[in-house]
Length: 368
Image (cartoon, rainbow, N blue to C red; front, side, top):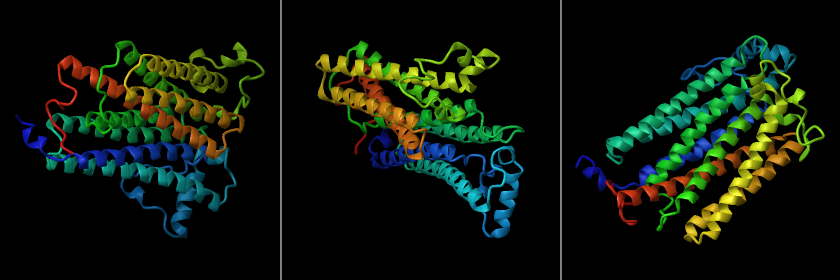
């Protein structure tokens, strides 16, 4: 069998490498949020994948970078009169964001090359990981397309839909790592099969979590969190008037650019997700399943409650940096647990269909 030489190789490196990448991506999402909240994302007006890793050195280099920024619409319309020191503050945030992105790409590429050369992954696994690497590269390219949208005449920020796409690709990459770690049994395996209706509930919680984060990306992109800063009422009622929600023409642009509708959708998404997660946890607890399944479901419900509370705090406090970042990090943690839970349940069901006993690893056996 082609995979047999690999089967006896230790898996500790692959697990460690993927966990490191996972943590770096989680940090990247938070740093990206900080870059957005500090208004730093458009401070670097060029995309230089290699030479851009070197920051300005000396007064002349800083003056040149500042001149480039002063030619941007954001400076002319929003930050005119900014000092060099203020520019350096936002520059370092964006520079750090880009360096972390470069570091993630380097760590992933080198780790994959080493794992492939030393045959720590099978051919199928290697191709899967290579596809994940292409996804990571696409995410970086979309990041520049996003920045470029904010450098167009009349723009003071990036296009919300492009920011959300950039975030969404990062989260898909993040989720793919979690699923690969599930495949490597990093989180263990359930001993018994979970009923189909409860697996469907886990998939629903995962899908709703992902959609809710994308709605949050639209909130961040349109800065909708800085408006309607009351809860549970919004504009004095459960929702603003229809004329406010659909003030933009054409009507569909309201779902992206109208801060009232964007925020309302995020609120509704939060209520639906919170209710679904609690209902799922209750159903799992009542089903008398194994402790591992119950623990994950209850942990998801608790995390979702905390995440909802952070969202309310960020809103009513008008999005201070600490609250915005805590809410964004909480979203990543919730998504990671939702992916892990759904992945483990799906993997156990797939093994059942294939007739593989719980203690057997299938085609390729992990040894460490």
